[in-house]
Image (cartoon, rainbow, N blue to C red; front, side, top):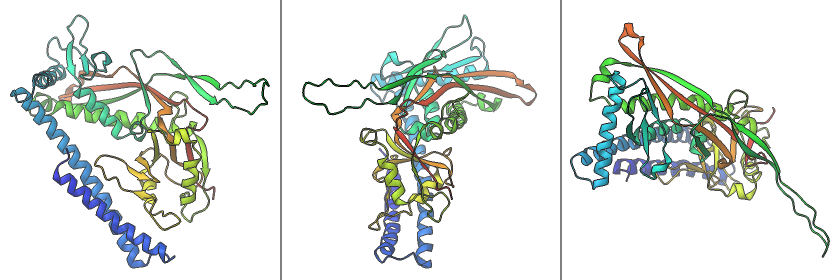
Amino acid sequence: MPSEVAKRLRDRRLNVWQEAKAIAEAAATENRALTDEEQGKWDALQEEMTKLDTRIRAVLDTEKRAKDADDAFDALSGKKPADGAARGAAGGQMAEEVRKWARGEEGAGRVLEVRRNPELGPVNYRVLTTAAGSASSIVPTDFYDQLIAHLIEVSGVMQCGPTVLNTGGGETLQVPKTTSHSTAVSAWQASPLPTSDPGFSMQPLSAYKYGVLLQVARELIDDTAVDLLGYLSMQAGRALGNAFGNDLINGTGTGQPAGIVNVATTGVTGAVTGVSGAPSYANLVDLEYSVIAPYRQSRSCYWLAADKTIGGFRKITDTTGRPIWEPSAVLGSPDLLLGKPLVADPFMPAQATSAKSIAFGDFSQYFVRLVGGVRFERSDDFAFGSDLVTFRAILRGDGTLVDRTGAIKLYVGASS
């Protein structure tokens, strides 16, 4: 459970928003613009909310790391049930195995593959793959989970509940793509019913390669007090997530994934609002209802936009003067826009004239293909003169929207 510190920060965030909301509602009730004093207070409150967001994320991240460490120590000291103790012991074994691999000790091999094994149920394990002829070692989930968590945290698309296909091999995968739906018509009694088949085509999912080189001082690897797994998972996860996440938004589909902004259809083109490319309240309502009800009511229905665009949402009010943006009352959950969860993605285009700056819809219709796990390789020679060990992390994946009939719609800024 979140600590009292995190809860107090959340309560302060809600209070700050109530103050800001009251300012906006007062001006809207009197049908006037904000005064200079109100505008200054509004800006200060928005800045405080941004700082609180940062502090809340930092507190939750710190508490999670502390809990993981406590669980491991409790398990090793016998304070947990048998299954928890076994898992904690395996976690300690994993850390030692990875450190031996990082040092290049005899028999450790050069390749570490962190991958998903669904056959083992909820207590998933990963496999430490060593060189040919060497025995494999079983590695618990936390390295893989940390790695994927860091990848997801920098990619908004991955936070919106896409359908993830994890395959063992990298051969091209054909998935059906819906291009049109069946239609029904009225008919007289005993009259033949016309046929109406949905339109399908096949969409290939490839295995594009993403890689990063990480260099670590030998002292960090040898020092057992250093969280080597945490360091490698954070650095590799964020680097791979930045590259892959950008393509999931902006990829052309040729030599890279088919990104959201290039395959989703336009739902609304904005009108001139006084801010280049910014949406109005009416634009956002129109965009929401440009997505048909089954997709709009899906549990994977989200708003997706860049941080600065989301900041603008806080200033938009409905026809009665109420802000349409709402802060989340649950720590770690997305804020809401018009009652639907809102996720920030740093790779979404900034709002501007003719820019596709907002996406809305059912993101379960966006398929992300991942091939196996993340492969780590070690080189002691690449930076031999600097006494650095070089790690290469490689991820293979692809992504595409499989329902092109309008599962996800885009807002396009006014052309002038």
